[in-house]
Length: 159
Length: 196
Image (tube, rainbow over all chains, first blue to last red; front, top):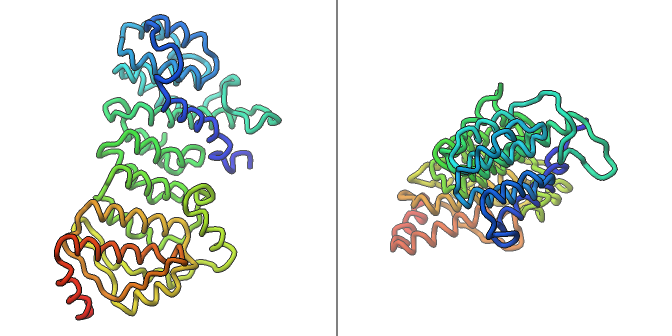
């Protein structure tokens, strides 16, 4: 019964992400160069803050930063991997969508990541981590928005 | 099997599809209307409305007799009614006699006066979130698809204190307003008097 109501156990952090995402450009260092933002992105370990930086990188529209992030497309933390993939997808690199879609289908074992806790008193579990990572993947696909960046048919067939 | 059947993520997919938009996204949202999860169905209806997907009207029609409860209504605008529904009366099969007889891109035809009267008498209590949201969205979608053929039959009695019961009546009242705007009110009134 551990995953009876995943929507309400995982949703709050995504709501935070949504609110912060909508405030892009309002807060943070808007004058930073793309390469500087990549360094900020890499040093940020909180996924929703990292997402915010990632979206700023996308807004800068400088695809030259992608090689600096390429190794992060296999980051063990799926939230950070997904954020990296969002940057790739947002800058027109097809690998972004593919990596996020892969997270969506990924039920494999993994180390402790982010957003898998129901509350501060709860303990980590692999099923919760997988659910949180896959939920975040759906969120990222929604953030990609453009049909050319995120193919809606990814949801049509589950492997 | 699709991800729409996956309870870990299916409630989030309609939101993502709405953001992605495009024809395939609408196709996905229409699929989501058939999800076993009432919550997913409600979110799908919302997504279709946001995308102004008039082509989804025929697929929304069956939801008018969808009596499933959704946990969404605890947080959404239907929250005022649904707990009341749970406490008072179980879903009634009589609700299937909803006042809309036929919907497609070009027409929205209401039932005869007796059927509508029957529905409005029972409709203020046993409706659940799925049906309420469906009606609400249908109204908006129909507004965008400019129904060319409208049969108004029966006299709508607006009941402002019966929040759930007024949803369908709002559809009727809205249709009248549309016809008046189009300068066709006289013709519609004649049709009402003839009994549709």
